[in-house]
Length: 219
Length: 193
Image (cartoon, rainbow over the protein chains, first blue to last red):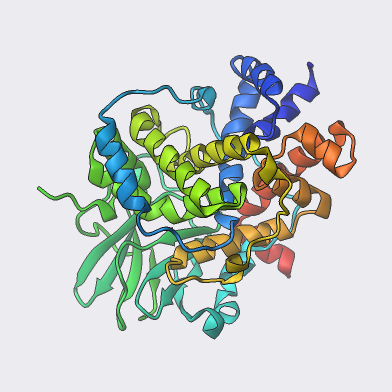
């Protein structure tokens, strides 16, 4: 199995859809094929996105406690992980000519009319980026943004919930350039608050260091 | 000194897990536990088995966090990859589950369950939308592989298509999905107009 065929195994590998034998063949190939390492880094991220399309269901209440307890009981035995994360990921694969007209930016821009009352969510417009601030009745919030540049090296975007003169930290993120991104806010948003995004050092700042690049209307 | 974990990036939380901070593991669960459980349940089609999968995966995160390198992947993708791998191992072991239809159980139809976070709802819709735009056979191949846990050879037999066709459809499907998830807003607007 050589030539183009073996490169095609990368998608099966990213989706955990190879037989055990093929997996071994591909891993041996991967160790010395920069092209496959690069493709795998990109396609593994894409495969993982599929996780988020799984249907909703209630999560067992005791699971969190059992996990933390299991970790406590476990001590610090270091168990080797599967080798798939042992390869150096190179730069993300260069974008080939886009051929699938999906319109996620349009999705983001039209959330207002599409969510509305059906899901009991409120959308608030943004200035500085395409997208919306989405709020539940209880004040739980998420941002959907596109058209943000990837942050420069050593920097990340930080989200703030702004109430009067105070700003509360609500999360850090680093989108791929221009891609539509959903950001979970760590803080609730109350009526009258705004949500802003600033560029900060990678670990975040206790308070915004500049004017917001993106600012929502009042919630 | 209590640490304000909620304000940290996913990758910073993983770094604290690597230093054996239990609270950081809890924080990671608070962010991704529900998504992990739903993925596991979708693949293994059983809540009790899905719980085991998620618990095993989080234990692997606890043990392996020191090996996670943020410059190689996003933490969310790393977590979901660990969960998916274990779920697929379980469903392949439990052969009898494989025959069950991929259609969702009844309670799956309740969109926006009480504990459904806003960002998860939005993520689900974003990815479902990108999936829906794929050509039918590409989407079918991706869904059966990822959610059904079928290998390419099993899919060829099940769908009555040559193995080479399945491989090409899977490659094209995943590549197209990547492009649509990464499509920039400018591109989208241009295409919509």
